[in-house]
Picture 1 (tube, rainbow, N blue to C red):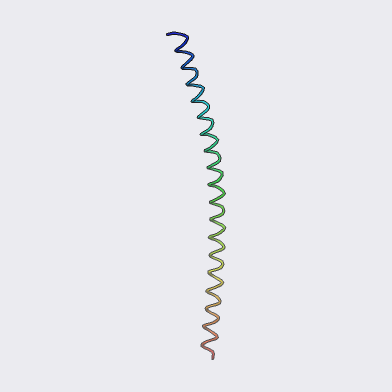
Picture 2 (picture 1 turned 90 degrees about the horizontal axis):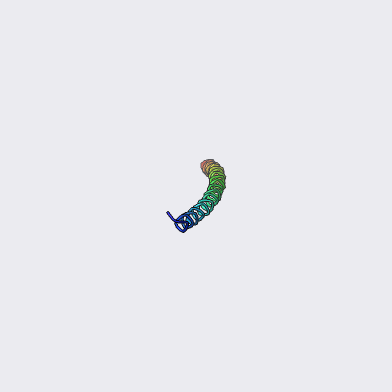
Length: 69
């Protein structure tokens, strides 16, 4: 095997290592974003549930007032 072959192989390995590093960084960023989105979703679900409970309580009070008339 010639020096040229090893030089080409080394260059390809360097490219693969660089790409691996890029993909690892991208994966880290995506995992971080996913975590933030999951937290945001949990907060929105909690807010929606609280709002739903308040609306249901208001409807119940309105029905009670309506029946008492």
